Length: 278
Picture 1: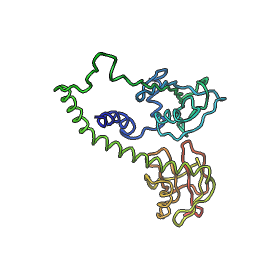
Picture 2: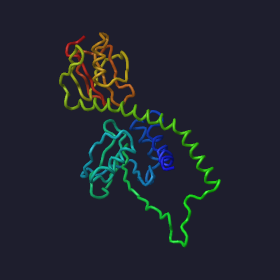
Picture 3: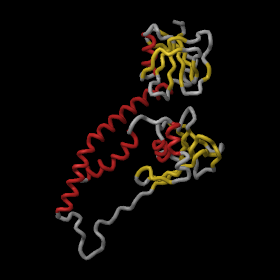
């Protein structure tokens, strides 16, 4: 019976994390603002989050970027971080999640495309199974209604077992996908304007930049290292743009203006250009 209750309780959490394609930072912001501005919502049992749309902490309060991939994980990261008073989620390019370091709730200021989230955790006291009556209440009455209810719950658990397994597989796939993108983010600023070698080619890495005058060869879901290795193996590939927030972040270029240096990009991406033009 305990396993049944745990499985049933896990269903909504897994569904909320794994249902459909992963939304972008902007899409997650739009799901909150302005519809939930000023509201307190129970996002999981015992966790209450208050949303403050188009608000950020004052500049004197320290906020630290966090790699949380969605709004709920951003709040949980704050709850698990010592000295964190709340979280901020940004729809702007760059890091989406920020943890606010403060001993109390900080003052807020107007800031578009940002939502500040405070939280509180409520822990329910366990109920006494045997109240002070003359006779203890039978917690397991032997009647047909209880057996029918148990059978119905077991049937529901069996129906949902495949859903749980599918959701878990989707979660693991998204975790692997994010791991690839996190490796790309780790290239900067360490390898900015430095050379890296993949296959038979050496590339110069340009963080948060893109080439101009380019045409696309193809898009793939490859990680950063695999993307450059694939480009090295294809003579038609002249350079690479790795666009972190895209579902297929590896963008191989068929042509680009080789006499023009890469320029700043409005999206989080990395340009990798062969040292010796192909």
